[in-house]
Amino acid sequence: MATIIDGKAIAEKLCAQIKEKVDKLRKLGIRPHIAMINIGENPASKIYVSKKEKLAASLGIVSSVYNLGDNTTEEEAANLTECLNNDKTVHAVLLQSPLPKNLQFGKSVNLIRPDKDADGLTLLNLGKLFSGEPEIVPCTPLGVLHLLRTVRRNIAGLHAVVIGRSLIVGRPLAQLLLNANCSVTVLHSYSENIREICRSADILVSAVGRPLFIGKEFVKRGAVIIDVGINRTETNGVKKIIGDADFDAVSSIAEAITPVPNGVGPMTVAYLMYNTVNLACRIEGVTLNF
Ligand code: NAP
Image 1: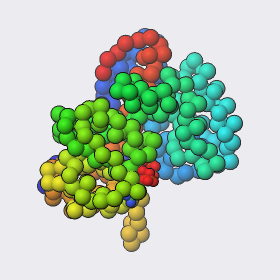
Image 2: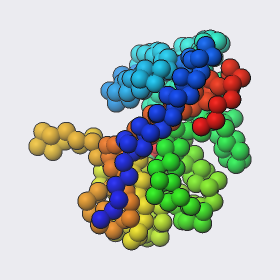
Image 3: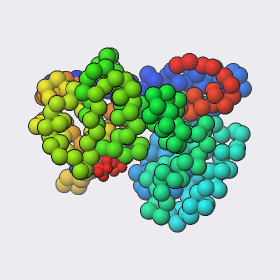
Image 4: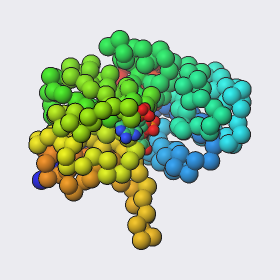
């Protein structure tokens, strides 16, 4: 049976390190501050933002949340971003995705000042990642790489298959894995022979958002599976959150697998705090290495 990679416990360890840094900053009179912009009425986004607020508070990080309605215009979103960019007490700005249909995420996120870009999604930060000299890296890919390294210290030369090519997960993750010297294949909804390609993966990351998408026939014996998917299901009135993988079936073949919940999710939130502390250090001119 596969080793279950305990994202919750690993994230707690990371958070303990982050808290140490926050405590050191506090002694210097600095309190890292993240501002989160949440536009629209997406119920899942509200839950994620509230989790981020709670974690920030538990680590001594200041957070402020700006909830804007479904009908927010591009100009209103831009004005708020500009305000936060210029606010000297704010070190990090996050734009929660998804946005309502009238707004383009790529365009709006780019209005965040790159040196306050909490999720590393501005063109400058993505460009640095793509040029192999990353500074602020998107949180979910950072979390995925961290979990992976708990079971595979050396990933150089391994074949990593990433299913999904979104701006927030698939694309930056592929680049991060490439920077770590993996041979990377990215699959998406136009890809052919998905099953066969996945079966050649030493590392299989699924970021599709479809329950039971990864079956036994997708997995090479001994592979590591990182399941990024979050799918809300209901069977006989029982609500459940599950990933993309058919967990029980693939666990008999894989060497290690992340569960959903308590896999990638807690790592994403922990790395948001990690990025916030790093941004605060840079803005305040303090060096505190992790
Ligand atoms: P997204 O923007 O909807 O991207 C999904 C990707 O899956 C797209 O690239 C799409 O291809 C691809 N895809 C869809 N159907 C496919 C198929 N049949 N075969 C192969 N590829 C297929 O979603 P996302 O924002 O990346 O999120 C993906 C999942 O991860 C969601 O369940 C989300 O909730 C979850 N997530 C979790 C975390 C976490 O912290 N755990 C963080 C972020 C997201 P095309 O590009 O061709 O459309």
